[in-house]
Image (cartoon, rainbow, N blue to C red; front, side, top):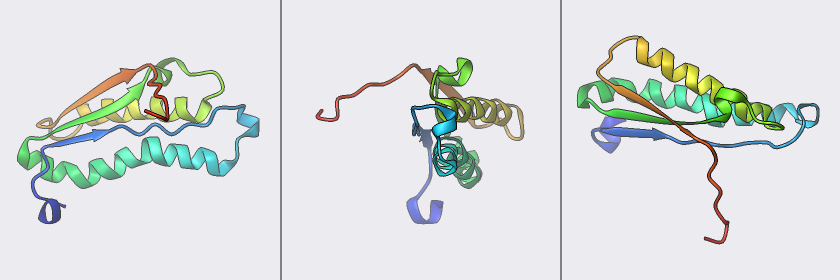
Length: 116
């Protein structure tokens, strides 16, 4: 990746795809899509970026959600993906080379008018 884009100094993972509704109404594809977007993507990006970021002493920021800690009504997949992200970051922080500082930030909810 560094050959194509140059040195990587920072990475921000801020995925937040959701499905609002009852779990029994959720399609398997919706579950998979949310887990892939919010959780699996941080694995793939981290795996690709960490070797270069160790060289550059880069920083990584993973944006989670309060729903990862307490769960949200009618947002089972989102809550599960954010809880998984929190576990991923904690495990990443305690394993391997600690030269990269992983940060985690919980955000309650960002509401933005689509017209803005």
